[in-house]
Length: 360
Image (cartoon, rainbow, N blue to C red):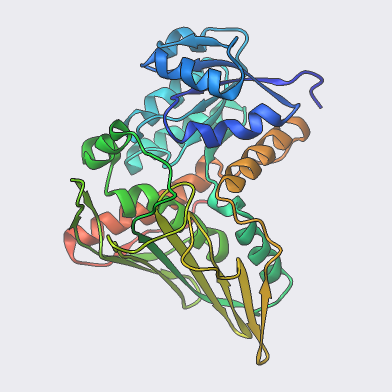
């Protein structure tokens, strides 16, 4: 176990960095020593808000990576910058946590997997949904045999509006509207990573994907890739789907994004429901189980969306101290990326896309 805290640099200090910083600020195993952003004033604002105003501020990634007081870099950049930034960090000898999705093509993913595995150092692609407490509770119930063998998973993602949501800077939305920088649509490719990660987490690697992807204009401008549906098949005649619906006048309670996420997992003996993803509609239980004619609601589960970020980072720091594998590894993240790439390809071609052999 390391006796000194891991010295952390966050690269990219946009809206989402507030959630990534929480555990680094409160965990004695970590210390934020530097922030890097093309807008240094934004980085300084974040440092002040987090109570770490003495950290080094830089606007040059190469210069930051040359610093000896940085052990770990958290890369929070637009998707098209992921590969080169991650390769630079790996070559600089840093431990890397890379924002999802790992990159925007299978060729880039292959290159990054090879580099990460050759480095011999921990490399993580950040995913928070599988660490969200309701998901952790559901996974424990399934592992305990609560629903028998899982047969299918249904995921629903429903953006709307919210009087309580945080403000997303316009620049954070602009690049997500540009497929050359985002790699795909805001819901299927970007946010879809969370849902595909959940499908992988509960059902394993898909063998086939089929998708219908449409577009909806937003009142404030831009688009969302909805209504859309992505269906997937898993080995052993198991199935799943992701339904994406944009309801512009649907009020959603959320302290973060104006979006509700729900999951239903059906097994041989029962059914599990997971609620309260980004936000919530009404007051559903975080987890509910149907088995043998009885519904059991689990209400003593933390639902704050930030908790997935906290627990994901806490797990990574524990891996760095004690050993083990981060989640997601580069190889696991490539499997999740295949869902999104397969969906985009299927929608273009109008055909189902075979995803090949599992590489885990």
